[in-house]
Structure formats: structure tokens, C-alpha cells
Length: 288
Ligand SMILES: [Fe+2]
Image 1 (cartoon, rainbow, N blue to C red):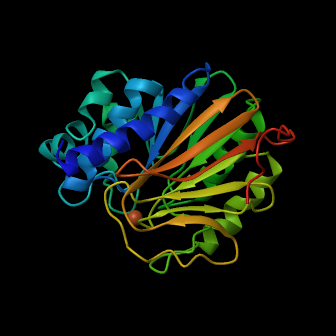
Image 2: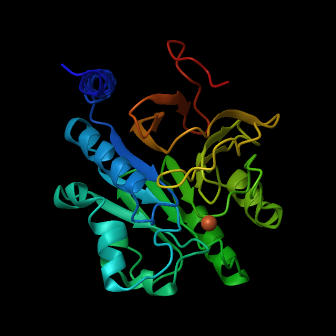
């Protein structure tokens, strides 16, 4: 066997072993990708990696964190920058849920496969006790904030997961934390027990140490990567900015298990998070 083929085999085998480890339970699984819409080689390679994993893990959904299409956004671009890179997942019936980034045109809201149903911001319950809330962080006006507070107050889901493009916690040298957004959003996340917040915009992976009880991730490297751009500040728990990456989340009742995975299939971060108000079982490692 040639060296390159052998390396591919080893990478596939190592990713398969933990995939099998996760796939024994009936957990709700989803993947998270951000800043995807280049139509370039890296996007297609990450798409292929996701499809390989899906054949073992059967994740239900993919969250798209914005910048879904860079540049031109004609029908051909929806094909080349979304439908073809993720063709195997779409054929398998995986649901994609998108929000708008700064490069996205409002016309994306009406694109059926993004499940936005014509809205800038929306809420969906893909499975009982799991609530996804997608925001438009390009324009966080009073109406959107009032809607968000109402959604959070009404939700009785165990897991409230909020996703939007611009991170309110990030160590990125290029963009970093958006402080006006943090001022507006963080009090609501804390007050209503949001467990997980997902953003992109900075082109790498980062997990912050929990901030006021909320877990923040940056997953902006699914097609582009800014090598060396994560500054790993004091509140950064883990960062990966050497290659493209994405995140898998596995919600098993009271515990969310996550793995961040590189384009090559290497696990670059992993851990377990209890839902708000629940202690982590003693057999699981607490997050750093
Ligand atoms: Fe962006």
C-alpha cells in the first residue's frame, strides 16, 4: 500500500473508532460548519469528511453559521457552493439550518434547503427538548431582541442552542469579540439558561472557557482558515487554526458531548457539557 493511501486508511480507521463509540446511543446529533461558501477544494474535502462520518453517526442536522455563499449568489452558486459540496448529506435527508453572515444576501432566506422560511431569525425544535435559535447578527434591532427574549422565555426545552455569525467571544486577531452584540445578547443567554452559543466569522475553531455559565464556540473554519489567527487569550480553552475544521455535537439527555474535527479527520478538541442546572457525572472529565 502506498504511503498516502496508508495514511488515509489510518485516519479513516481512527475517526471510525470514535464514531462507533458515539453511535451506540440514541442521542440527537448535529454537525456545525461556518464560513463555508467558497466552492473551493477545502469546502469539498470537509463536505466529504462530514459525509463519511454521517454514514456511521447518522446526524440529524447541520447548523450553518453564516457566510454560506461568498461572492456571486446566483442559482449556479447555490449549486457549486452548497448543493455539490454537501450532496451526499442532502441525499441522505440531513436538514441544514442557516443564518446570514456579512457576505450573505437576503435572498438566501428563501432558499428552501436553508430552512429559514423567508425569515432573518427563527427558532426550531429538531427534536423534543432541543431548541435551535438562529439570529441575524448583521442587524440586531429592538424587534429581534424582543423576539429572542420571548422565544427564550417560552422555551421549556432542556437544551437551548443559539447560533449566529459574529462571535461575542473570540480571540481572533482578525475580528475577535463583538462587544456591542455581547452587551445586548449575553444578559438574555444568562437569564434564560442558554447552554451553547455557536458563531463563525473568525476562520478557525475555538472553544472559550464557560462565561457566566454559557459555553461559546467559534466554528468558522469549514472552508477557509486563517493560520495562526487565534490568539488564545486567557478565556480561550482550546483553539485550532492550522487547518479547516468543523464540530460534531451529540446530545444524550442531560449531557452534550462534542468533538471538533480537522479536515484530515483528526479530533482537535473534545469534551462533555451538562445541561444548565445539572452536575457532570463523575465518570466524565470536567472541561478545562
Ligand atoms: Fe464573516
